Amino acid sequence: MFVYLIFAIVLSCVILFLSSLFANQNPYPEKLSPYECGFEPFEDARNEFDVRFYLVAILFLIFDLEASFLFPWAICLSKLSANAFWIIFDFFVELVIGFVYVWFVGALEWE
Image (cartoon, rainbow, N blue to C red):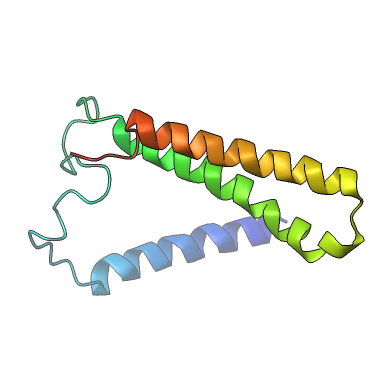
């Protein structure tokens, strides 16, 4: 166990050293520009930034995960009872109502 730990530490240090030695360290303006979150990289971490990025990300996760429940339902649709069909149909209607609400509130708009 101890030999494995020493080997892992030495190997990580060697890989880190070699990557810093041989990697192309050529930052250019496009690489340093803001990407998805909208604030400049390599600045103070305590800067205020727009919370809309997180709102869109959370909404994407919610609707994406809820939509993933529809795939198993669609596969075994012929084997389901009428009650199970209407339960999933109700779930789908609630999902659509939530999406329409988010759309009308303007949470998906980006300035």
